[in-house]
Structures are given as C-alpha cells and as structure tokens.
Image 1 (cartoon, each protein chain N blue to C red):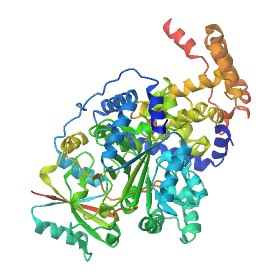
Image 2: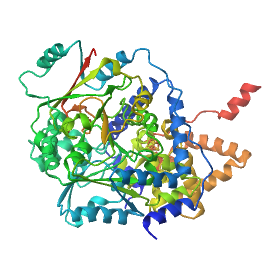
Image 3: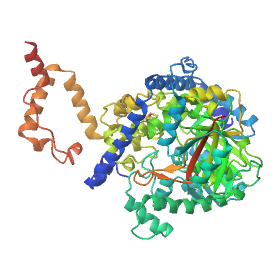
Image 4: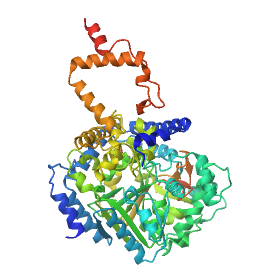
Length: 453
Length: 184
Ligand code: SF4
C-alpha cells in the first residue's frame, strides 16, 4: 500500500485535474461560508452543538440505554455490535433470514468502515449502492474519495465512460443531466424489487427512539419505504438527547457540508410501517476505546459534514484516496490511528496544521491539535515515519535554543536564496510540483528589532 | 457477557467529568418576514411557489404547472407502495413551513403511503399561510408533543451534484416541487 505522500504524488501527476479538484472543493468551502454568514448566531450555534455533544459523550451509556428502550417500544429491533465483524454478521443474518439475494443501500460511512459490501458480496448477496456518487465508484470498483461527495475525484468524461460500460449509455455522452437520468432509471428497478434496504443514521434521538437520515437524492427513503426490511446502521456516538436538539444540528449540517440551507430530505423514522420490519445496529468498533482517550475523545463529536475536507489544503491537493481509509481528510486522519496505528502512521502527518479544519468544524472539534497529539504519540512509540521524526526532533531542539533558532533562520534564508536545490530537491516531498518562495532579505526578527529602535 | 453489556461496561469504566446539557438554543434571531424568507428559500432550492386565495386559484396554478398530466389527489391508504409507481403528480397536505430553509414538515398519516412523495414524478404540497415559522428551533417547538410514526422535512425537489458538481434536479425522488400557500 502506498503511504499518503506517495499516493499524493501520483494524484498530482495530472496538474490540470489537481487544480480542478482543488478549486472545486474550495468553491464548496466558499458556499459554506456564504450559507453560514446569513445566520447571525452561527458561532453560538456551533458552541451549542459542541456542548450538546460533550454532554452526550459524558453520558453515552445512559443515552444508549434510553434510546434502546424507546426504539424497542416503537417496535424496532435493536442490535449491538462490538466490531465490524459482528456488525457484518448481524446484517448478513437478517438478509439471509429473509432469503434476500440483493439489497439497496444508501450512504453510510459506517458500513464503509466495516467493509460491509465486500463481506456481503463474498456471501453471494448483491449490494447496490443507491447514492449516485457511490453507485459511480461502485461500478468502477473504487471506494468513495469524500464522505459527502463520493465521486469528487472523477470528471464527467470518466462517469460517461463508466456508464457507457455498465449501463450502455452512448459512448462519449458526458452530460450530467443525461447521465443522472440514466442512473435514475437503472436504480428505480432495484428500489422496486429490493426486499431489504440498508441506510445510515445521521442522528438518533434518545428521548423518542427516532433516527434521522438526511439525503438530497431521496434514495434512503425510496429504499426504506418500499423494502420489507429496513436495517439502519449507526455508530454509538450518533445519539443526541432530545428531539429539539435536532434544530441545532439540522441548521449546521447542510450549511457546513455543501452550503445548502438544509438537505432536501430530513427523514425521522420512529416506527416501522404496517407489515415492515425495522432494525437498528448500534456499533462500537473502537469508539469506546477512543472515548477513553482524553486527547482524542472529541473526535467522536463529528457529524460527518466534510467541511474539514473541503477547507484542507492538503486534502484538496492530494485527493481522498491518498488517505487509504474510508473516512479521509483531517477527521479521518484522527480516527484512523485509533483502528490501527501502524498502518496509519502517515495520516496525522498529512497536514500543515494550519487549523482551518478546526475553524470550520460545526461541532468545534480541535482537529489540528489532535493531529499534533497523534504525531507525538506515534513518535513516542517509535512509529513515526523516519524522515519526520528526525526533522521533528531537530526542529524541537532548534526551537528550544533561541540563539541557534536565529542562526538557523539566517541559514535557511541563505540556503533558499543561494542554494535552492537543497530544499527544492527530490528528497523533500513537499517540494514536488512546487516552487520554493523567494527568501526575504531580513528575518521577521531583525525587521522587528529595527522597527523598535 | 452480551455485546450490549460489554459496550456499556466499556463506556462506564471511564466515567467522564460532568457536562450539563446546554438546554434550548435561545440565541436565535427572529425573522421579521418569515413568508419572504420562505419564498426566497424555495427559490434557492428549486421549488415553485404560488399564493392562492381559494381552491379555484390553486387549480388554475396547477393546470398551468402540469398541463395534461394526471394528478393523484386521494389520501386513502394504499398497502403497497408499488401501486404508486406510475403516479405523475401527487398532491398532498403539508403541516407547516420553515422560512429559513424552505422546509415543509410532512407526516405519514397524511399520505397514501410513506413512499408516495418520493416515488411520484412531481410533487404538489398545500400549506396554510398561518402555519409558517421562522427557524428550525421554532419548528421543533411546534413539533413538541406531536408524534408521527414517520415524518420528514422536505425542502425542494430531489437533486444531486455528484457528477462534477453540476446540479441536476430529479435524482431519485420528485423531479419538481410546487408549493401552494393557501390563505387559510
Ligand atoms: S470533524 Fe467537524 S468539520 Fe470534519 S466532518 Fe466532522 S463535523 Fe464536519
């Protein structure tokens, strides 16, 4: 497997595409800015959301028990899974019980995290992803590169070619309207035929036992309301205490994600419909472990809006697949080492620590600080990538010796100015596809000193 | 030990410092013109809006919007959603609208079937002018104590931008939404 820096290097080979990716995501970020600025109390809302989530994490056990009791009273079956394997077995058990050979699934990052698709496929069950972006990447045998915009790494030509191969659309047709219509017709057949529908969960309300699913396409509802069996899969951190709290989260979610006012559909499932079976699978899969780590606990507040992806200068120019994890971007880089430190050591380093992620996060997670905590943790355990730990140790030493810091700065300016090949070389991965800036003649410190005198 | 108890024990093994729930969100700014906001929001989300004094005006608006299409107006419960597969235009009653985002609250006991507003090709929602609220906080205040087996906020026709971020209206749900705001 390629590490993040190596995979990014491949991604940026196509300069035009990299720029398109970068600019498109930045555009989504700007839409988020616009949508948030029309709400004068936006910052208070973020604070409030963050406090509700803190409260949930401090009382998670109690709220899970309350949610379970209410959901059961509503006639919903509640299952618990400690890890991905158990989650997949539960889902498969339900599918097998109903003798189903195909099922429709709407977007759920949890099922991606558990690799449910490949598990079910091996058991001979066809899984049809119904979110358009997810269907596109499924056809291509890829995984989503973004949690809200799964096919953002692709251009319309790619989608046209993929649909030509899988749906028989005319070769060369790359009109988004036409291709979306083709997918609508194709997936409608599956919606009408499926016995089982799987959905994710955006919020689960302890007070009422309801769960809320947000989509723009309407695919979660098309699946769930036609199928005989609806299985909703959720991480245990998705609980919120009261229905009224949804007012806060639904105002934040879509505006942060895509700059929309709200998603087209915000569906509140309480009871199964007449003759239907409804199941909820509550999944731990490392969440209780993360909860016990004070410095990383906050990451469980995430509502998966992807604002931190869209704003991240590293994500925008390296693409989601370079993170080799179902959840990429800044938040993914904090979640991944909790699953497995060794295979994810590169991710906390895939950041400039600029802090833009923390600034846009609707639930105020200190994302960039946690990346920094992971770096320290990985270094302590001797897992950090060799180059990183050397240069970080060197940096720490320089920073703790002011005189040498000044000297090093002067040397740095000398090097960038007179010997640019030393930093602009192939050993420095950050210099690839980049020109180093011109070095200032004097340092900030000398400039500041001269201004003072 | 069951998985349930194992998970709950893992949580309880690490008691966290007390953090109280912040309560209702009080800081929201009341809109001076929820109807103006609603109208603007519906435009943003790609829906049509008509103000009608009576049923006659509503019919004229719909004849103009959906000429020569069959309109399904029955609220009678159907047992299989598949029976609605060919519905062209569905007319339903919404509970109330939300100014800030154009969302309309719908509940399943006012629908022929839960899938109806998703499977139809075009959707028409009637709402009463007097039901409008400004923000989602007011919306949930209004929902306090009212309980639906299935209910949802709908804002605009179904859409996607999954192909190169080009907005396409009509993904899996309705291809168009017409909102008729009735005087009473
Ligand atoms: S960490 Fe924050 S900004 Fe990133 S996806 Fe989660 S909620 Fe959104």
